[in-house]
Image 1: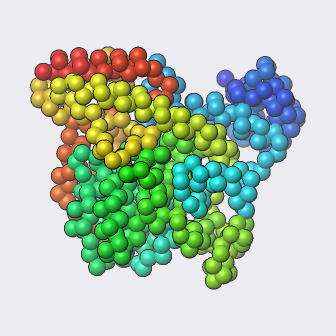
Image 2: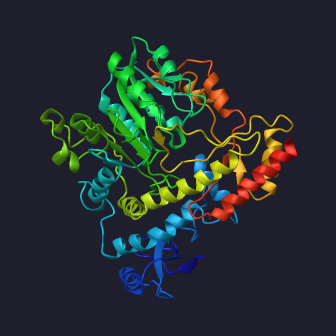
Image 3: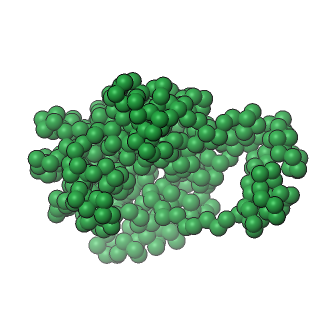
Length: 474
């Protein structure tokens, strides 16, 4: 619980400070923090640090607005089933964040040095990519990636109708226009046939989403892009450590982007990054989101370097504390992914024997990495509604629910004009329906929250609950 304290240095007169305790630091590190903040109470025990914040004028933590949830973020609401991702990350990162603050680590890094450069170098080695560049979010990384392609106004970007909207919505601010195409009904990833049918004289870019961790059919898609001279972008936010025919996702396109939101396999709290094999794309992406600082020293194109002081007017730097958090999580990423794969393979094998229930389909030539969300389907339980089936599962202790995000053609921004006059001449969404593949994929689909810390026994319990609910529905 927070305890009231005296006003902190830098707070307006009359304001009240708050002290929150978090575990994870040894006593020397905790004492170094309290020494740097006069008036702070001493740590109560050897594994406590003191994190100071000020809520000026009220002395209370500002209320948190409800967050719209997507994919694994829904795990936050789970009770009695293990530690939720956000709390696990907070506990694991507390010590590293405290140590960074205690040694006076900078809270803004403009030149790409320190923890920012360390993280970018680590990402390249961990994911097998080149020229990693961090940003404040995955959305920001995609925005700068689209800007880096430097496409003419009105150009169309083709994307799948299943995924998170931010794979394509940043194109709104680049003078581009989205085209939504159907997906493969088994994997939920972009259908190469639908892509080919949607190409027009205005098409300039294709953005694939490795949906829920399953790689798209990259051999066919890259061949189509080469045939038509199209840029290729990959949204890998769901697919850390996924691979297609032995090749890591994020290494097929002109650029790839990842989110480091707290729900992702490699969280920074908020953050993202871009990778590209092309130096000119990195130069332009750097100029787009990192003015001054590293733009002066890292942009290699002399013509672009002239604009280093202002960049393109945007500031999308990753916060150093986010980089510290991400570095703590990077060290355990491979182990956590392996653990998750083992748990979900166990669950899939069990569900494969349950009549009327189908585990998520995984093609034999791909690896699923960390499985952003586990979504089996129960389309053949004709005797009961999906809602009733979910009710039975939840009554048995299975954290199951309907997916919170559906096909993108239902979103107003992707189905018609934007409420932005600056984009009136360029943002003209095109829907290449009917989206029969997406509807087939979604039919009877449900989501089960499985956390890294779950035990095999818990997974077996989930499988037994599925069997019982299916038998009841038969």
